[in-house]
Length: 395
Ligand code: RM4
Ligand code: MN
Ligand code: MN
Image (tube, rainbow, N blue to C red; front, side, top):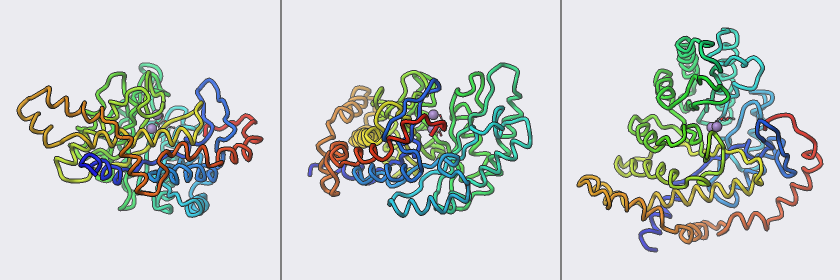
Protein backbone atom coordinates (compact mmCIF):
# COMPACT_ATOMS: atom_id res chain seq x y z
CA UNK A 1 0.00 0.00 0.00
CA UNK A 2 1.37 3.41 -0.85
CA UNK A 3 0.99 6.29 1.54
CA UNK A 4 -2.07 7.74 -0.24
CA UNK A 5 -3.86 4.42 0.19
CA UNK A 6 -2.88 4.26 3.84
CA UNK A 7 -4.26 7.77 4.33
CA UNK A 8 -7.50 6.85 2.60
CA UNK A 9 -7.90 3.65 4.61
CA UNK A 10 -7.35 5.53 7.85
CA UNK A 11 -9.82 8.24 6.85
CA UNK A 12 -12.52 5.75 5.87
CA UNK A 13 -12.04 3.77 9.06
CA UNK A 14 -12.96 6.89 10.99
CA UNK A 15 -15.85 7.99 8.80
CA UNK A 16 -19.43 7.15 9.75
CA UNK A 17 -22.51 8.85 8.43
CA UNK A 18 -26.03 8.74 9.82
CA UNK A 19 -28.95 8.30 7.48
CA UNK A 20 -32.42 9.73 8.11
CA UNK A 21 -35.43 7.47 8.57
CA UNK A 22 -37.47 9.95 6.55
CA UNK A 23 -35.17 9.42 3.57
CA UNK A 24 -36.86 6.07 2.96
CA UNK A 25 -40.43 7.37 3.12
CA UNK A 26 -42.53 8.89 0.40
CA UNK A 27 -41.94 12.62 0.48
CA UNK A 28 -42.69 15.30 -2.04
CA UNK A 29 -42.68 18.96 -2.72
CA UNK A 30 -45.21 21.46 -1.46
CA UNK A 31 -47.01 20.93 -4.76
CA UNK A 32 -47.59 17.23 -4.41
CA UNK A 33 -46.16 13.85 -3.91
CA UNK A 34 -45.29 11.20 -6.47
CA UNK A 35 -45.40 7.99 -4.56
CA UNK A 36 -42.81 5.26 -5.01
CA UNK A 37 -44.05 1.72 -4.76
CA UNK A 38 -41.04 0.57 -2.73
CA UNK A 39 -41.04 3.42 -0.22
CA UNK A 40 -41.17 2.69 3.49
CA UNK A 41 -44.31 3.64 5.36
CA UNK A 42 -43.67 2.22 8.80
CA UNK A 43 -40.77 2.65 11.16
CA UNK A 44 -40.06 -1.03 10.79
CA UNK A 45 -39.73 -0.65 7.03
CA UNK A 46 -37.42 2.33 7.53
CA UNK A 47 -35.19 0.26 9.81
CA UNK A 48 -35.24 -2.60 7.35
CA UNK A 49 -34.17 -0.30 4.48
CA UNK A 50 -31.52 1.43 6.58
CA UNK A 51 -30.11 -1.99 7.46
CA UNK A 52 -29.64 -2.71 3.75
CA UNK A 53 -27.62 0.48 3.35
CA UNK A 54 -25.43 -0.38 6.32
CA UNK A 55 -25.00 -4.00 5.25
CA UNK A 56 -23.62 -2.92 1.88
CA UNK A 57 -21.65 0.21 2.82
CA UNK A 58 -20.57 -0.67 6.36
CA UNK A 59 -20.56 2.97 7.44
CA UNK A 60 -24.16 3.75 8.40
CA UNK A 61 -24.76 2.05 11.76
CA UNK A 62 -27.26 4.65 12.99
CA UNK A 63 -30.50 6.11 11.75
CA UNK A 64 -31.86 9.56 12.62
CA UNK A 65 -35.42 9.42 13.92
CA UNK A 66 -38.20 11.97 13.87
CA UNK A 67 -40.39 11.97 16.93
CA UNK A 68 -43.76 12.56 15.30
CA UNK A 69 -43.11 10.25 12.38
CA UNK A 70 -41.32 7.38 14.15
CA UNK A 71 -42.75 7.65 17.66
CA UNK A 72 -46.50 8.10 17.14
CA UNK A 73 -47.10 7.38 20.83
CA UNK A 74 -44.20 9.49 22.06
CA UNK A 75 -42.15 7.96 24.87
CA UNK A 76 -44.37 4.88 24.79
CA UNK A 77 -43.12 4.07 21.30
CA UNK A 78 -39.50 3.94 22.48
CA UNK A 79 -39.71 0.30 23.49
CA UNK A 80 -40.91 -0.90 20.10
CA UNK A 81 -38.27 1.23 18.32
CA UNK A 82 -35.59 -0.30 20.56
CA UNK A 83 -36.92 -3.71 19.50
CA UNK A 84 -36.59 -2.77 15.81
CA UNK A 85 -33.06 -1.53 16.40
CA UNK A 86 -32.10 -4.88 17.91
CA UNK A 87 -33.92 -6.84 15.21
CA UNK A 88 -32.30 -5.02 12.29
CA UNK A 89 -28.91 -4.28 13.85
CA UNK A 90 -29.22 -0.54 13.32
CA UNK A 91 -28.92 1.84 16.25
CA UNK A 92 -31.16 4.86 16.79
CA UNK A 93 -29.14 7.99 16.08
CA UNK A 94 -30.16 11.58 16.62
CA UNK A 95 -33.65 12.20 17.90
CA UNK A 96 -35.46 15.01 16.13
CA UNK A 97 -38.35 16.61 18.00
CA UNK A 98 -41.13 17.87 15.78
CA UNK A 99 -42.15 21.42 16.65
CA UNK A 100 -43.58 22.42 13.31
CA UNK A 101 -46.37 20.13 12.17
CA UNK A 102 -48.99 20.41 14.87
CA UNK A 103 -51.73 23.04 14.37
CA UNK A 104 -50.75 24.77 17.60
CA UNK A 105 -47.47 25.80 15.96
CA UNK A 106 -49.11 28.06 13.39
CA UNK A 107 -47.36 31.06 14.96
CA UNK A 108 -44.32 29.26 16.24
CA UNK A 109 -43.17 26.91 18.99
CA UNK A 110 -40.51 28.26 21.37
CA UNK A 111 -41.13 31.68 19.79
CA UNK A 112 -44.92 31.57 20.00
CA UNK A 113 -46.48 34.57 21.81
CA UNK A 114 -48.86 32.15 23.56
CA UNK A 115 -47.19 30.81 26.73
CA UNK A 116 -49.37 27.68 26.61
CA UNK A 117 -47.96 26.75 23.19
CA UNK A 118 -44.41 27.42 24.38
CA UNK A 119 -45.09 25.13 27.33
CA UNK A 120 -46.34 22.35 25.08
CA UNK A 121 -43.33 22.75 22.79
CA UNK A 122 -41.03 22.44 25.79
CA UNK A 123 -42.90 19.37 27.02
CA UNK A 124 -42.54 17.73 23.60
CA UNK A 125 -38.82 18.48 23.71
CA UNK A 126 -38.48 17.02 27.20
CA UNK A 127 -40.34 13.90 26.01
CA UNK A 128 -37.86 13.69 23.13
CA UNK A 129 -34.96 13.80 25.58
CA UNK A 130 -36.58 10.90 27.44
CA UNK A 131 -36.99 8.97 24.19
CA UNK A 132 -33.33 9.60 23.38
CA UNK A 133 -32.33 8.39 26.82
CA UNK A 134 -34.34 5.19 26.52
CA UNK A 135 -32.71 4.49 23.16
CA UNK A 136 -29.19 5.49 24.25
CA UNK A 137 -29.17 8.22 21.63
CA UNK A 138 -26.74 11.01 22.28
CA UNK A 139 -27.99 13.88 20.16
CA UNK A 140 -31.28 15.75 20.36
CA UNK A 141 -31.42 17.71 17.16
CA UNK A 142 -33.56 20.83 17.12
CA UNK A 143 -34.85 22.45 13.96
CA UNK A 144 -37.44 25.21 14.27
CA UNK A 145 -39.83 26.45 11.63
CA UNK A 146 -40.43 29.53 13.83
CA UNK A 147 -40.49 32.87 12.12
CA UNK A 148 -42.85 35.36 10.54
CA UNK A 149 -44.02 36.22 7.07
CA UNK A 150 -44.59 39.98 7.24
CA UNK A 151 -42.65 42.93 8.64
CA UNK A 152 -43.91 44.16 11.97
CA UNK A 153 -45.91 41.06 12.83
CA UNK A 154 -43.48 39.54 15.33
CA UNK A 155 -41.51 40.93 18.25
CA UNK A 156 -38.11 39.61 17.25
CA UNK A 157 -36.37 40.51 20.52
CA UNK A 158 -39.05 38.95 22.67
CA UNK A 159 -38.99 35.78 20.64
CA UNK A 160 -35.21 35.65 21.05
CA UNK A 161 -35.66 35.77 24.85
CA UNK A 162 -38.28 33.00 24.72
CA UNK A 163 -35.90 30.88 22.67
CA UNK A 164 -33.06 31.53 25.11
CA UNK A 165 -35.26 30.51 28.03
CA UNK A 166 -36.71 27.39 26.43
CA UNK A 167 -33.35 26.14 25.19
CA UNK A 168 -31.82 26.72 28.60
CA UNK A 169 -34.63 24.71 30.20
CA UNK A 170 -34.14 22.03 27.56
CA UNK A 171 -30.44 21.92 28.33
CA UNK A 172 -31.19 21.53 32.04
CA UNK A 173 -33.13 18.38 31.26
CA UNK A 174 -30.34 16.73 29.24
CA UNK A 175 -28.68 13.63 30.60
CA UNK A 176 -24.96 14.06 31.08
CA UNK A 177 -24.04 12.01 28.00
CA UNK A 178 -26.43 13.86 25.71
CA UNK A 179 -25.97 16.82 23.43
CA UNK A 180 -28.37 19.43 22.14
CA UNK A 181 -27.81 20.39 18.52
CA UNK A 182 -29.23 23.69 17.32
CA UNK A 183 -29.90 23.96 13.59
CA UNK A 184 -30.37 27.20 11.72
CA UNK A 185 -32.05 28.10 8.46
CA UNK A 186 -32.34 31.52 6.81
CA UNK A 187 -35.86 31.19 5.41
CA UNK A 188 -38.67 28.73 4.73
CA UNK A 189 -41.29 28.06 5.88
CA UNK A 190 -41.24 31.63 7.16
CA UNK A 191 -40.36 34.14 4.48
CA UNK A 192 -39.78 37.39 6.34
CA UNK A 193 -37.78 36.37 9.41
CA UNK A 194 -36.68 33.06 10.88
CA UNK A 195 -35.96 33.01 14.62
CA UNK A 196 -32.71 31.04 14.21
CA UNK A 197 -31.61 32.29 10.84
CA UNK A 198 -27.86 31.77 10.80
CA UNK A 199 -24.87 30.21 12.54
CA UNK A 200 -24.29 33.25 14.73
CA UNK A 201 -27.79 33.07 16.17
CA UNK A 202 -27.53 29.30 16.58
CA UNK A 203 -24.17 29.66 18.32
CA UNK A 204 -25.49 32.37 20.62
CA UNK A 205 -28.46 30.22 21.61
CA UNK A 206 -26.32 27.13 22.07
CA UNK A 207 -23.86 29.01 24.26
CA UNK A 208 -26.69 30.52 26.28
CA UNK A 209 -28.25 27.08 26.72
CA UNK A 210 -25.15 25.42 28.19
CA UNK A 211 -21.99 23.43 27.51
CA UNK A 212 -23.74 20.38 26.01
CA UNK A 213 -25.32 22.47 23.26
CA UNK A 214 -23.61 22.77 19.88
CA UNK A 215 -24.46 24.06 16.43
CA UNK A 216 -25.74 21.87 13.63
CA UNK A 217 -24.84 22.95 10.10
CA UNK A 218 -27.27 21.90 7.40
CA UNK A 219 -25.41 22.61 4.17
CA UNK A 220 -28.65 23.53 2.37
CA UNK A 221 -29.49 26.18 4.95
CA UNK A 222 -27.36 28.98 3.56
CA UNK A 223 -27.75 31.75 1.07
CA UNK A 224 -26.43 31.30 -2.41
CA UNK A 225 -22.63 31.58 -2.52
CA UNK A 226 -22.19 31.72 1.28
CA UNK A 227 -18.79 30.42 2.37
CA UNK A 228 -19.90 27.42 4.42
CA UNK A 229 -16.39 26.13 5.06
CA UNK A 230 -15.49 29.39 6.73
CA UNK A 231 -18.47 28.98 9.06
CA UNK A 232 -17.26 25.45 9.75
CA UNK A 233 -13.74 26.70 10.51
CA UNK A 234 -15.09 29.30 12.95
CA UNK A 235 -17.35 26.82 14.71
CA UNK A 236 -14.45 24.39 15.03
CA UNK A 237 -12.27 27.13 16.42
CA UNK A 238 -14.96 27.90 19.02
CA UNK A 239 -15.52 24.19 19.80
CA UNK A 240 -19.12 24.71 18.79
CA UNK A 241 -19.54 22.44 15.79
CA UNK A 242 -21.78 19.55 16.79
CA UNK A 243 -22.95 18.03 13.55
CA UNK A 244 -23.98 18.27 9.94
CA UNK A 245 -27.01 17.69 7.84
CA UNK A 246 -25.55 17.03 4.42
CA UNK A 247 -27.38 17.72 1.21
CA UNK A 248 -26.72 19.83 -1.85
CA UNK A 249 -28.53 22.83 -3.19
CA UNK A 250 -28.80 24.76 -6.39
CA UNK A 251 -31.34 27.42 -5.45
CA UNK A 252 -32.54 27.14 -1.87
CA UNK A 253 -32.98 24.31 0.64
CA UNK A 254 -33.31 21.86 -2.22
CA UNK A 255 -32.29 18.71 -0.29
CA UNK A 256 -30.49 17.34 -3.35
CA UNK A 257 -27.87 14.61 -3.23
CA UNK A 258 -24.61 15.58 -1.57
CA UNK A 259 -22.03 16.69 -4.14
CA UNK A 260 -24.49 16.60 -7.01
CA UNK A 261 -24.15 20.33 -7.63
CA UNK A 262 -20.91 21.41 -5.97
CA UNK A 263 -18.69 18.54 -4.83
CA UNK A 264 -15.76 20.90 -4.31
CA UNK A 265 -17.68 22.65 -1.56
CA UNK A 266 -18.21 19.42 0.37
CA UNK A 267 -14.52 18.68 -0.12
CA UNK A 268 -13.61 22.10 1.27
CA UNK A 269 -15.82 21.53 4.31
CA UNK A 270 -14.19 18.16 5.00
CA UNK A 271 -10.83 19.74 4.42
CA UNK A 272 -11.40 22.38 7.12
CA UNK A 273 -12.33 19.63 9.57
CA UNK A 274 -9.36 17.41 8.76
CA UNK A 275 -6.97 20.35 8.76
CA UNK A 276 -8.27 21.32 12.20
CA UNK A 277 -7.78 17.76 13.42
CA UNK A 278 -4.24 17.66 12.07
CA UNK A 279 -3.37 21.01 13.61
CA UNK A 280 -4.87 20.23 17.02
CA UNK A 281 -3.94 16.55 16.97
CA UNK A 282 -7.45 15.77 18.16
CA UNK A 283 -10.65 14.31 16.77
CA UNK A 284 -13.44 16.79 16.18
CA UNK A 285 -16.56 15.29 17.74
CA UNK A 286 -18.92 15.83 14.83
CA UNK A 287 -22.06 13.87 13.95
CA UNK A 288 -22.20 13.50 10.18
CA UNK A 289 -25.78 13.08 9.05
CA UNK A 290 -27.59 13.09 5.76
CA UNK A 291 -30.74 15.19 5.44
CA UNK A 292 -32.03 14.76 1.93
CA UNK A 293 -35.39 14.24 0.33
CA UNK A 294 -35.39 11.91 -2.63
CA UNK A 295 -38.81 12.40 -4.06
CA UNK A 296 -37.94 11.12 -7.52
CA UNK A 297 -34.89 8.88 -7.22
CA UNK A 298 -35.25 5.44 -5.66
CA UNK A 299 -34.74 5.89 -1.95
CA UNK A 300 -32.39 3.08 -1.00
CA UNK A 301 -30.39 3.42 -4.22
CA UNK A 302 -30.13 7.15 -3.66
CA UNK A 303 -29.00 6.70 -0.07
CA UNK A 304 -26.28 4.28 -1.14
CA UNK A 305 -25.21 6.72 -3.86
CA UNK A 306 -25.10 9.51 -1.27
CA UNK A 307 -22.95 7.52 1.14
CA UNK A 308 -20.58 6.55 -1.65
CA UNK A 309 -20.13 10.16 -2.74
CA UNK A 310 -19.62 11.28 0.87
CA UNK A 311 -16.87 8.69 1.31
CA UNK A 312 -15.18 9.80 -1.89
CA UNK A 313 -15.16 13.46 -0.91
CA UNK A 314 -13.97 12.67 2.60
CA UNK A 315 -11.17 10.49 1.23
CA UNK A 316 -10.11 13.22 -1.21
CA UNK A 317 -10.00 15.77 1.61
CA UNK A 318 -7.86 13.40 3.66
CA UNK A 319 -5.26 13.45 0.87
CA UNK A 320 -4.38 17.10 1.40
CA UNK A 321 -0.81 17.30 2.63
CA UNK A 322 -1.35 19.30 5.80
CA UNK A 323 2.29 19.84 6.63
CA UNK A 324 3.03 21.17 3.15
CA UNK A 325 -0.13 23.28 3.22
CA UNK A 326 0.71 24.84 6.51
CA UNK A 327 4.19 25.76 5.26
CA UNK A 328 2.85 27.16 2.00
CA UNK A 329 0.35 29.30 3.93
CA UNK A 330 3.13 30.47 6.22
CA UNK A 331 5.25 31.76 3.34
CA UNK A 332 2.19 33.03 1.44
CA UNK A 333 2.90 30.73 -1.47
CA UNK A 334 -0.57 30.98 -2.94
CA UNK A 335 -0.10 28.74 -5.96
CA UNK A 336 1.46 25.96 -3.90
CA UNK A 337 -1.22 26.16 -1.23
CA UNK A 338 -4.15 26.14 -3.61
CA UNK A 339 -2.58 23.40 -5.72
CA UNK A 340 -2.43 21.12 -2.70
CA UNK A 341 -6.20 21.30 -2.44
CA UNK A 342 -6.70 20.94 -6.17
CA UNK A 343 -4.38 17.94 -6.44
CA UNK A 344 -6.17 16.16 -3.62
CA UNK A 345 -9.59 16.95 -5.05
CA UNK A 346 -8.60 15.71 -8.49
CA UNK A 347 -7.25 12.38 -7.28
CA UNK A 348 -9.34 9.40 -8.29
CA UNK A 349 -9.91 7.77 -4.92
CA UNK A 350 -12.34 5.13 -6.15
CA UNK A 351 -9.79 2.30 -6.59
CA UNK A 352 -8.48 2.80 -3.02
CA UNK A 353 -12.04 2.88 -1.67
CA UNK A 354 -12.79 -0.39 -3.45
CA UNK A 355 -9.73 -1.91 -1.84
CA UNK A 356 -10.85 -0.62 1.53
CA UNK A 357 -14.25 -2.28 0.99
CA UNK A 358 -12.49 -5.50 0.00
CA UNK A 359 -10.51 -5.40 3.20
CA UNK A 360 -13.74 -5.11 5.21
CA UNK A 361 -15.54 -7.86 3.34
CA UNK A 362 -17.92 -5.32 1.80
CA UNK A 363 -19.03 -5.35 -1.82
CA UNK A 364 -16.76 -3.26 -4.06
CA UNK A 365 -19.80 -1.67 -5.65
CA UNK A 366 -22.54 -1.37 -3.01
CA UNK A 367 -25.13 -0.05 -5.45
CA UNK A 368 -24.62 -2.92 -7.88
CA UNK A 369 -24.73 -5.38 -5.00
CA UNK A 370 -28.00 -3.85 -3.84
CA UNK A 371 -29.59 -4.03 -7.28
CA UNK A 372 -28.56 -7.67 -7.57
CA UNK A 373 -29.76 -8.58 -4.08
CA UNK A 374 -33.44 -8.93 -4.92
CA UNK A 375 -34.42 -6.74 -1.94
CA UNK A 376 -35.90 -4.03 -4.13
CA UNK A 377 -38.13 -6.48 -6.01
CA UNK A 378 -39.22 -8.01 -2.75
CA UNK A 379 -40.24 -4.76 -1.05
CA UNK A 380 -41.83 -3.45 -4.23
CA UNK A 381 -44.06 -6.51 -4.24
CA UNK A 382 -44.82 -6.27 -0.54
CA UNK A 383 -45.45 -2.52 -0.38
CA UNK A 384 -46.89 -1.58 -3.75
CA UNK A 385 -50.59 -2.12 -3.10
CA UNK A 386 -50.46 0.10 -0.05
CA UNK A 387 -48.18 2.73 -1.60
CA UNK A 388 -50.33 3.08 -4.67
CA UNK A 389 -52.88 4.78 -2.46
CA UNK A 390 -52.27 8.44 -1.75
CA UNK A 391 -50.51 8.98 1.52
CA UNK A 392 -51.35 11.95 3.63
CA UNK A 393 -48.45 12.36 6.03
CA UNK A 394 -45.15 13.97 4.99
CA UNK A 395 -42.98 11.04 5.94
C1 RM4 B 1 -35.81 21.19 7.60
C2 RM4 B 1 -34.51 20.88 8.33
C3 RM4 B 1 -34.65 19.82 9.39
C4 RM4 B 1 -35.55 18.71 8.98
C5 RM4 B 1 -36.86 19.26 8.47
C6 RM4 B 1 -37.87 18.20 8.12
O1 RM4 B 1 -35.57 21.86 6.42
O2 RM4 B 1 -33.50 20.58 7.43
O3 RM4 B 1 -33.40 19.31 9.74
O4 RM4 B 1 -35.76 17.90 10.11
O5 RM4 B 1 -36.58 20.05 7.34
MN1 MN C 1 -31.69 19.67 8.30
MN1 MN D 1 -33.60 21.57 5.40
